Amino acid sequence: MAMIIHCHTPLDESKCKEFRAGDEILLSGEIFTARDAAHQRLLAYYQETHQWPIPIKNQMVYYAGPTPSAPHHKVGSIGPTTSSRMDHLSRPLLENGLKGMIGKGERSKEFRSWMIEFSCIYFVTIGGAGSYLSKKVEDMKLLMYEDLGPEAIYILKVKEFPLFVAYDCYGGSIFK
Image (cartoon, rainbow, N blue to C red; front, side):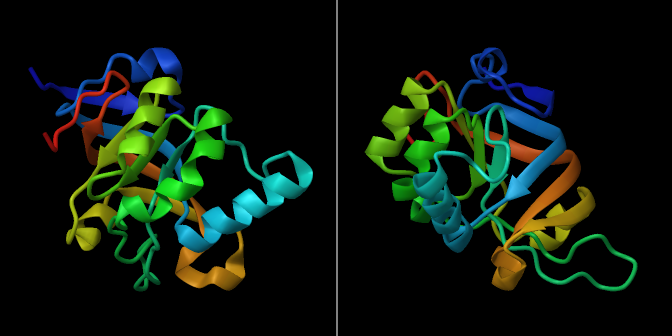
């Protein structure tokens, strides 16, 4: 039976093992944003140096590109990006301890097998509700790749950010 769970970052394997597909999560803490272009740069850096330019272990990435904020707001609209676009870029991050990803839509069969192998969680949030989700962001700071604009990597401080566990680390899925 699905439950509402209040969760704080960072995630670790023991926390991930508590979640089941369908659980409703209210997430608080820090997460970083990254989309396709940022993922490609992260991986290129890792392949060249065998190090990550940002901490990966026990972290969460939100596949989002925040829009510019209006005056007196921390962030503009910040809705989820279609996650399957990052499937082919995900394995090295998971191997190095990334524990959670947030986006929208289904993922590949291969990606779902990695969720089990690395005890990770894939969360979805509400597509089309970027303005609402921005109200759950308490702070946003540019971390790297400023030249990518909205696709740069940002650190978000979120409070009760609404998520659903789409794939758990046991093979459970809300899409079945």
